[in-house]
Length: 454
Image 1 (cartoon, rainbow, N blue to C red):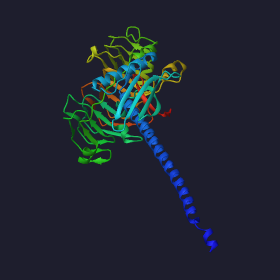
Image 2: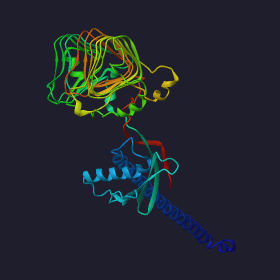
Image 3: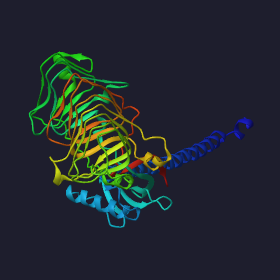
Image 4: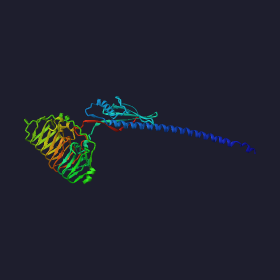
């Protein structure tokens, strides 16, 4: 009995001990849970701040994507030009919530009022490289802040018109049986026709065999195929339905810089009074002065640059071998008076290997650059090394030619390709920015430059 009396209350003590332990454990769990909730809230705010910065970056990428500067813009004026153009784009679009100050700052822009997300931005030229625009974007959310920085390279603009093997402002007429083929991919022979002056954008009098697609700017235009039709492997109506698109967004026909070639024309000045143009002749970095209208009766080999001043009518009655580039200075006031007529066989090749042409080797990818001259080929043409850009284009004869560049017609007059011609486009490895067309600069986003600052 005495032993039992001494054990009274032990259970109560043990219960109280366990209760204290459990209460302490529960309090610890509660504290830990509260800390986890707080951490989760902080992470949520940080994630939303980073998302705000990412959203701000996309906004800045959109507006900076509208920037297009002249290639002649001095680097010291890059920043002011970029800011001015973006400010103009924002004003034209009546955008009020995004404001770009002259010093490159964009004050806080609300993204989501419910979450309190905002972003702000800063534009600045890279101190180590004046051809890079640094864009720093900061996102905020309920006190949390995240900042990212990216770089935009000031890069040459590659005109979309060079995505086509043939691009014309006027209609295209193939009176006979044309064939266009490619070496690598069908896109190399794609055709773009603006044709706002003619409702029949493409006319083919015989059988059609085109590897590339046809796109037409005039939404009211039609195509007229008189014979059997084959386009990109499809035949008949399926070829037209699948590979002819009418009413596409019109392309820009870029204005080339022909005067950049004038400095290379340091050789002979063509003068029929002092030169014998009835026999074969080699013209090295030569110039044809305005109004001289020369006629070459013998074979002509052109090495380097042949620079032609307008107005002029230049006639080649025999074969022409072009080892370089033929340039007709741009002058819209002389339109419809300038002509280049090639009556014999024509072939173009790269610049000669002589050291005197070393400076010219940077001018790659263009064979004929005469936007205000009508150019006709009435003989055969076997090889065209680069882009041919002319006022209007006329081809006749039964030719089988390989083209390493685009054919571009700036005139609203028809581009006519007579005879049973076979044009093989081999443009996959061609120069992306042909000589004379490096005229614009854009901002190219460099994803590899992406950095999370904090």
